Structures are given as structure tokens and as C-alpha cells.
Length: 69
Image (cartoon, rainbow, N blue to C red):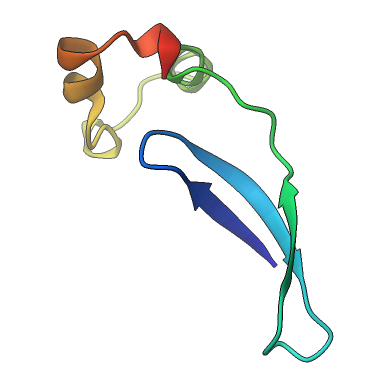
């Protein structure tokens, strides 16, 4: 199973395995970390993005350094 690991600031893709779908063993992070500004750059390079997908976009740019998130 893949899932999102979240530490309160960053979210990353992770993997867990199971033989019975009841007991899972976490295998760890499977997605390389990127900064929020790099993520935005990648998303916007594909064309116009619906503003509904920017849930906290203004928050990150107004209240923090997006290059460090």
C-alpha cells in the first residue's frame, strides 16, 4: 500500500506491505523530497492550474519561505 507520510510540515509518499491486509509493515519513504516552490514550478509548467487546487498556496508564500518547505 502507498500512503502519505506527514510530519506536520512536509508530506511524502511512503510504502507499507501486508500479507493479510490487517497487519502492515512500513517500508519507508519512496518519493524524493522536493521543496514547495519546486513542486509549484513543476505543476505550473504543465499549463494553467485550477485555483481550487491551491488550498494553502497563499499561506505558504505569505507566511514562510517556500524554498525551505
